[in-house]
Amino acid sequence: MPIMGERLKEFHHYIIEERLPTVEGEQGIVIFDKELRVLSSNTKAYELLSILRKYESLTEWQVPKPIQVICANLLAANYNTNTSLIVPIKDTGYIAIRESLMLTSLQEQQIALLINEASSREMLNVLIMAYNLTPREKEVVFEIIRGIPTKEIAYNLGISHYTVQDHLKASVEDFFSISIRLIMWI
Image 1 (cartoon, one colour):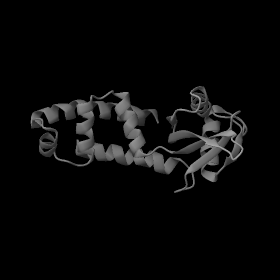
Image 2: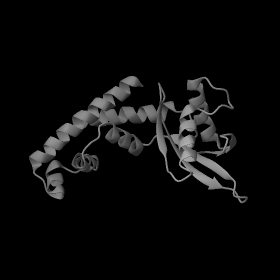
Image 3: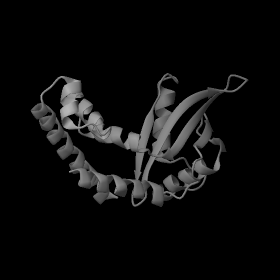
Image 4: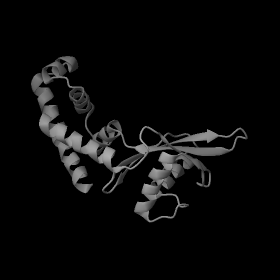
């Protein structure tokens, strides 16, 4: 299992790091007005927006659907929400989008989007949500990710070694199943 896990992790990082042609280290930031017109954008955001537009066959001035959805959610909630979204891009990787409300000095509302390659942590959250793990299974998975041996996990969580193995078996089967499906989809 550890060898399979390492190979899946290496392959996942290859997908993210090698296929999204963006400026490294820079955070993608784009500012929209209430009508979803781009007011300003940095290079990385422009490149990632271009990738999203390409897969929807949109012009440079059109707003991709995932961004429309996340902005509509913010506007519908009267700006009282924090939403994030992971967008799979076929044959490319995953893009993470987060939004926030901004106010100008004249109290005009604007929407700031952070748009970047999805991190390993964000992808882990997607996998956990996809399989609706129990709270205890999540605890076991997070301990395993930290590299804690199963006997120590049992001691830390106050459960038997066999119970840890049962949780691990259920969690690992689910994770490998969805990871393989995600890799095959890409």
